[in-house]
Length: 79
Image (tube, rainbow, N blue to C red):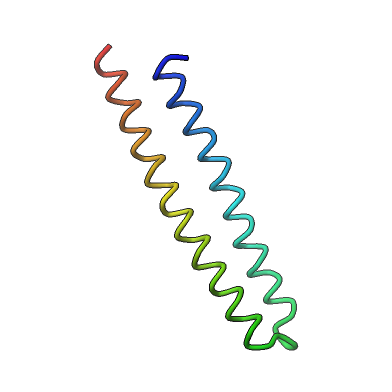
């Protein structure tokens, strides 16, 4: 597998993971909205913490994806 193909595969994988994590964030927000009247403080804190953690992971994965895209661009410019 060439470096070009590896970078493309890595970008596709990261894109899939980001979509999965964003879906999880929206699912947690939707769940919290549906139980808003009966939600306890623990539920809100748990969802808030999980949303924050997933958001940080998404941010880091996007940064890695951008770096991979730049590497791919530099690789194509060299050829």
